[in-house]
Image 1 (tube, helix red, strand yellow):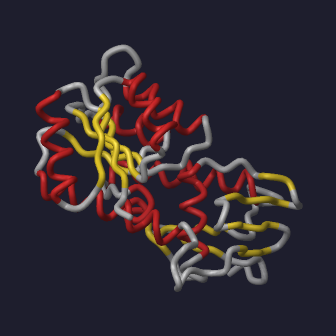
Image 2 (cartoon, one colour):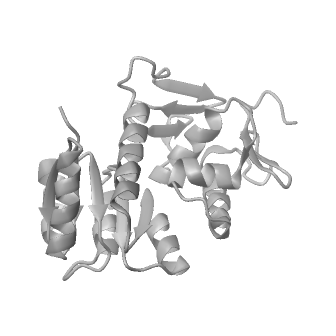
Amino acid sequence: MSARVLVIEDNAAIAEGIAYNLRHEGYESRVAEDGRSGLSAVREWAPHLVILDLMLPGIDGYQVLESIRREGNKVPVLVLTARGEEADKVRGFRLDADQYVTKPFGVLELLERVGSLLRRAAARGGDGAGSRDAALRFGDVVVDTASRTVTKGGVPCGLTPKAYELLLALVNRRGAVAGRVELLKEVWGYGAFVMSRTVDSHVAELRRKIEDDPANPRHVLTVWKVGYRFSDGSTRA
């Protein structure tokens, strides 16, 4: 079955152009022309990926994204907008957008990002033959990759989707160091150095949620002037 991609865009020419190219690539695609109809389509059609414009009539794209995440829906969202200011991008990523493409854009670039997000989502969904064990354990923390949940001492940690993906990116490196830009590219799909503090803020969230003493972490460790690495707690170096 082909992946379903929902395009929420009020410019009919742009929306239909994107939808046409998605269908040409073998995806199912639908168009919603405003925020309300877009939210309804997310709930009823259950797309595998959403392409979301920010400047929508009525409910804007930020409100749509916030509603999607508040409902616990972790569908990948690619924000597509004419807004190119850093503050807009930061706001989008704080609401757990997965990638950000600024208009005007190249169709090939957009399709490549769509494919990349869908492959990443499939790889982390636990359905592939080569997927890792559904549960990862360290200390009193359990990461359930099937349900994408994290508990500490049996209590849900309530991680945001991006903090969860950051944790998984570190855990999967098995102690190897990851630089901030490397993590930005893997988790957010965005490599600009001006956004590196985004990683730091999510690391701080992880430490608050999974460490016994966030000021003296055992699992999410800082490597001075390089980045971060994961430890199962057996070593501190």
